[in-house]
Structures are given as structure tokens and as C-alpha cells.
Length: 116
Image (cartoon, rainbow, N blue to C red; front, side):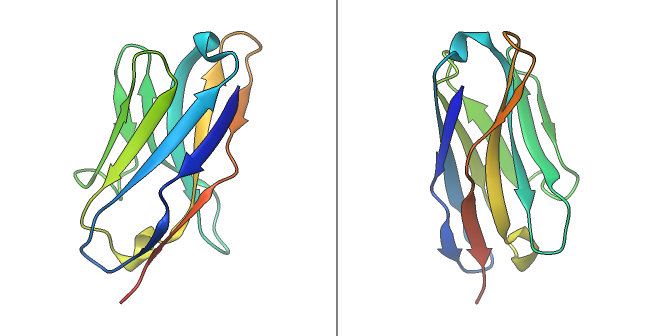
């Protein structure tokens, strides 16, 4: 499974941004996708995940502000981010779990910077 993120950039506090993840390869084997983020000096943390059944999970710091959605074919996934604040500044990674080889795949990441 190959993953490519896009949509990152520089925004001001309070603004919104939508990240996209394009998946290719053995997407038929994917059963869960998600977003993680990592800022300098910090561990990679969960942002949001979504399962094949549509169940979603969010990190505490983004609940109520971020929304994860995907298409039914697992070829596209999005993270709608609203009311962004400087603590949201990080590299955001797309990830996919495959039942074919029990691997977790990662994209290359996209930078999100929230600053006035």
C-alpha cells in the first residue's frame, strides 16, 4: 500500500485546513486508516482513525475540531481540521493497516504550521 499526503501549509490560528491522503496498491486489504502527527521533540501521536465499518476515534486534543472521512474504496481519506491552534503544528502522517500482510503503512508526511 502506497500513501501520499497533501494539503498541508501555513494557516493562522482559528482557521481551517483539509488534508488528503491518496492510497494505491493493495488497498483492498486495508481495514483501518488514520492520521498521526509529530512535532519536533515529541513522539508521534494519534490524531484520528477510521475503520472499514466507519467507526472513528480521535485524539483528545482534536476531538470536536477534526473530522476524518474516507471513500468506500479506501483510495482517498481526508482530515478536516477546524479552529486550528499553534499546538496543532506538526508533520501529519497518513497510515493504513493491511490485513494482507498485517503491516502498517505510512506516507511521507505533510507539514501543517499554525502561526500568526
